[in-house]
Image (cartoon, rainbow, N blue to C red; front, side, top):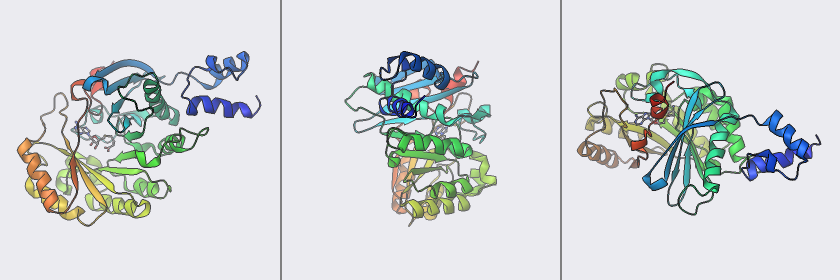
Length: 331
Ligand code: SAH
């Protein structure tokens, strides 16, 4: 086909989010057939869709071509719509409080399988399925299944398709994209050199190696001090404030002394802490911290001079936490 066909196809795909080539009337009927057959295999087949928060939160479970399952969650807010996407089927990081971690890694997703999750969300918004008058996915968070930095090439491919202007991509702002990681130090440094103002979130969950070794097992390879050094390098290179994710687990990591130690290690850096009430996974002995302990933790961080927010947890009643829906539907 002539080269300009690529431009036409890309404008339909990335610019207008149209996934049915048979409607692309600027292509001849036979070219539409060829494009559909040769270029556009079905990447994601819906298995289940669950809605809560009066329609503002939609969780999708997808089947991939080889039968693997992944999840995404679309969350509508007053001022933005955030899509939470998966980067791998399963995850190899084995964090004991995380549902995805329990099943191990099946495989990396391709760039197209990652981008397609965002496009699926964009199409839902376009179809008017999310309440409110926002028109597009404004934010993408890599907080679904998988460790995005363990699938670095596909991750960066997907990020470029998201941020490059139409027709090469969707033209999103890199500032609205968050890469969340267990702390793969060399990859954090690579990400810092990409020249994109992405937001980095580091899943710390403990300020001390003794506990973090058990909550985030990769800590035995990349301990807290090295992870934080990489985070400061990231902040320095990109000018962006790093988010420290900390799931508050009752009587495990929610003691006041740990909040004080955390504040001490973070103070003075371009950082803020995002506390996440633990979303208990089925069969786990752990549960979320008491409100009183959560408040004390927040207070200790504030007194220690570290900005902190408590995450608005969406989708609890629809197995919103990482991997829970796929686990419930395991074949
Ligand atoms: N692998 C990446 C991204 C996926 S998980 C990472 O670890 O950052 C996204 C966030 O959800 C991480 O901070 C993870 O630790 C957290 N998380 C996983 N299971 C959770 C649960 N049951 N309750 C609360 N947070 C959880």
